[in-house]
Length: 198
Image: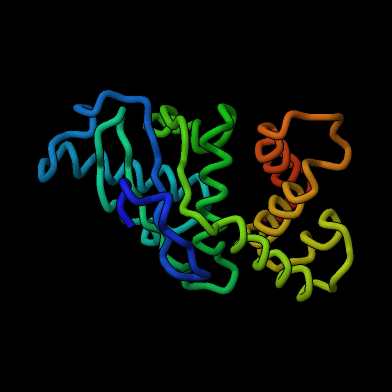
């Protein structure tokens, strides 16, 4: 998939997945391709997205850096452990954090300039299938506040919790909210209240 064709890309379970991170920075600050400045910029982007998703930096690869502020095409590969978030879940988590000024992604010096993350078509369907599989494995019909904390890793709990919270339109205890606030509110509730184990 290329940035020009991103609308036509389709995501597949556990296949590497590409996303496009837009940073509101002058393109010159990314350095010229092949220079130490560009290498440093790419290392910092990978470090920030890995830390924001509690993932290994080895899962991220910069495919391209394009003008338009700065558009960074990042490929996410599958994790090596069963507890790793899927590429689709990592991408969805980054998209939610890019739109939340209080998120971990936006707390780092470089990615504080994140304004959006564009995902390929099919990510929402992948997350729905993954959450359904997690729900079946966890016992079926319990609510996400009960079912997700039973998962073995905090990252799995966050994946389960944020997806199911977003699917129902936000936290059950939240008053009427704008749909655009749902990902940030769900991420906040899941990380601060539900998936608090180490």
